[in-house]
Image (cartoon, rainbow, N blue to C red; front, side, top):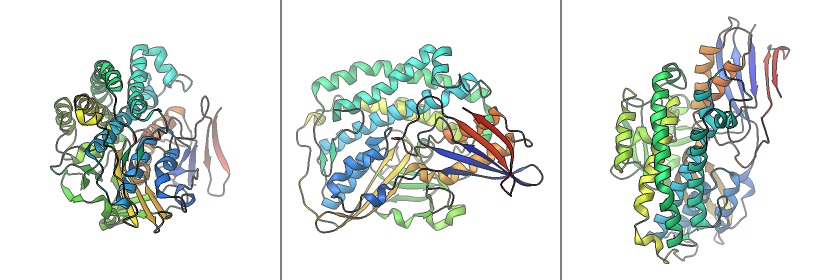
Length: 474
């Protein structure tokens, strides 16, 4: 008799979701689905609002990466005004985005994922979390917390607040970097470099001792997409789109983000509120692509800074063509933190960041504007249509987690096929399946939080709905 295993909720991710695993008549996993079970509705209730309010409104989509939505929204506003923002404003936006990458990647690596591969997949759930990490790897946990704090400090220095800063606006930004702020950031940089170096050395050891995970956790051919510089370098806030395949070959390049609808289609699933984008020319099945740190490192030829370039060269040796294991998202995040720190260090000596020429002034010059930026989890699109008064008529948001949706489904199925044995549900099996999702660091609704340890209710259901086996974690 075929069965269905439900993992609800998935823990140690930002937001609320569940996983269904389907077991066929022979006891083998026949498929899996990742369901997002919360609905926010930002695209609809923003209609009628002035486009100038959108950087502030859309930040509230997420409490972990509000900067990403603010910057993409401000860029969409730039396009509606049809202006080129001052050079100082562009550099300042980039500096804040680097702070966002550091703080978000540090949270993902140290707080959410490291407890699994440092404390053990089969360790007790009560200890397999950041508090267990603090107890068993005190200095590493403290350093990880401090590294995230450093990224948040950059956001606060520029925007006045760590979360939801009212700073980037259509046409530019509100305030420059101050000498005092630059001093705070510069004083913290040596510690931040030391922490990411420790983490990089540690994860190279993890790769060596976790080859089974490298091979099984989302390791499959796919396309990869992200933004690159004109010469194919790593980009985090600007540039054009590039798609590569699993051999590393470029299949589409230097696509203006304004033309994203020519290459990205969106599929709707009836069991999830999360849309499933795909590479339009190949369709929903063959057009599955991944975004985020793993994709950005696969599609670029260089990082543009020496230390991160050295790590990128080693990273690319871990695959045949592209690096296809989603377990190596963790390594890619650390390399991006290192690159961010190197660029931040260079920015602190750039006098243009202290300029007071920060905003272009214009009215409504275009009835549509697309803003694209690389959020920590991948490429983010804000697409606004307005009337002549600047009131929004239509809003389309394509977030990174949605673009990874098809890949997350395939990852869950791959892990479950290897570890699900018979009707018995075990905690280590569930944790491994959940970790497949954590590799992508999905951001489902980061403004929604759970206090304490999330409950977990897993049921194996017969086709007629009867509960055959249940496991509950309070």
